[in-house]
Structure formats: structure tokens, C-alpha cells
Image 1 (cartoon, rainbow, N blue to C red):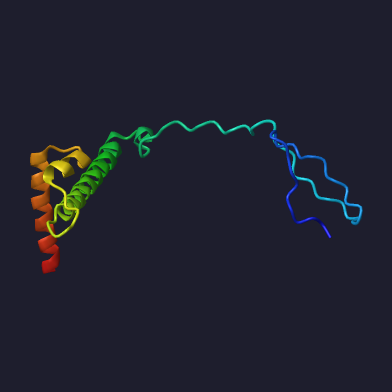
Image 2: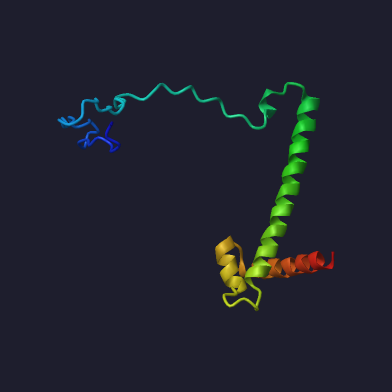
Length: 132
């Protein structure tokens, strides 16, 4: 029966010679050889921005870039809403670890005044969410 234990190796990863087991006639399996080189990596592709740089038609470029601008704007607004809700939750006085607007400002890289306004905005979003 083959030995189920892995073969020992020295620090270089080279397997140590197998000890001869006089009671067994089955040969021990050796580990795969260690790679001494890395396979050649494929050439990196040129950086592309949503394939806008490959559009030759100016009308199509305007249409597609406008579409992306509107999508990013909507995503940024939605992310801001989530920031406000998170700020309101962190500032909730019912929490034992409630944060002040200054502490929230430090975490979000905002001014304390902006953090305070975001907490208020987030509380408004939470109220509207509870009404629906």
C-alpha cells in the first residue's frame, strides 16, 4: 500500500530521498518537479474606456458618452443616498456606539457641517422608506 503521507522536502522544495521501506514493494510516488521559470504572460491589452476611444462617428460618440455620463451620475446619486443612510444609522442616538457628526466626517473625509447635513438627509430618506 502506498504511503499516504506527503514526502518531506528540504527548504529549496526539492524532495528528500525516499526512505526504503523494506516491508513494502510498492514504489513511492514523487512530487511534481518544481518550475524553474514562469510561463510567458500574454501582452497586456491597451487600456480602454468603455470602448469610447474606438468610436469614429462623432454622433455615436456623443450618444454613447452621454449615456455613460447619465449612468454614472445616477450611480453617484444613489451612492450618496446610501452614504446618507449610513451616516444617519451611525449617528442614531439609540446606538450604544453612536458617532458624532465630527467622527462621521473623519471616517468619510467630509467636513463636520457636511456630515451633519448628510445625517439629516439620511434620516429623511429613512422616514420616507418607512412610509412606503
